[in-house]
Image (cartoon, rainbow, N blue to C red; front, side, top):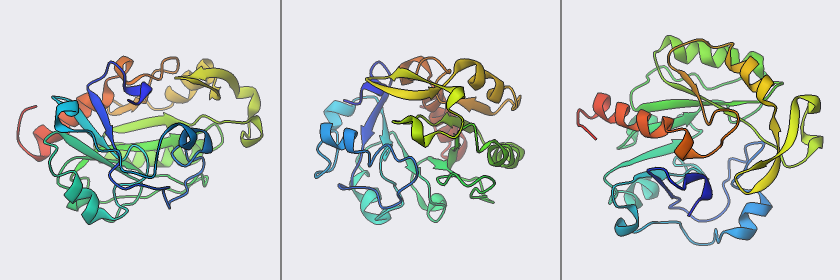
Length: 231
């Protein structure tokens, strides 16, 4: 059980074993510390009994666009699910809502600009204190499409990876100590985006899904819009 999901109505699923070839930076899924705790040599496929009424979060690690056909086939049995990807190629082909990470690289002004928001449950934007110009552009683009935006603030294992170390502090993140953006800086960045459809992953203090609830609400919204059914 992913400790981040405890108490929430979400459950993880990673149908393709092995490291993710995307190599985003930082990449939490390929992190040696995580891989030492979890056996990634076999797929993570919860049983239907384990899922129950939960929403299956497909590829919170790895990428649902990698070996796309296999991912879709192996997750067909789950009625309530959404897919995660940082590649734009198959977004419209997924049979369920998609959370799309539009800036898997940390380049200052770069992001994927998807022109058709169909199937997008939300666009996830990775945020650090040194990529704000790019975040500004991505937020403006997707907010204009009325697509929900989730700001995900990056955390780091070591101080050497941080360009503005004075804006981060060592703090317990779920189970391990990480360098996390200070709450005052978090608030200052969030206040740049006073749009109704811009939200955050967590609240700057808690990183637990049970304390957030955004993905659950966005999943229900996406299903009602794109698939015309109630959840």
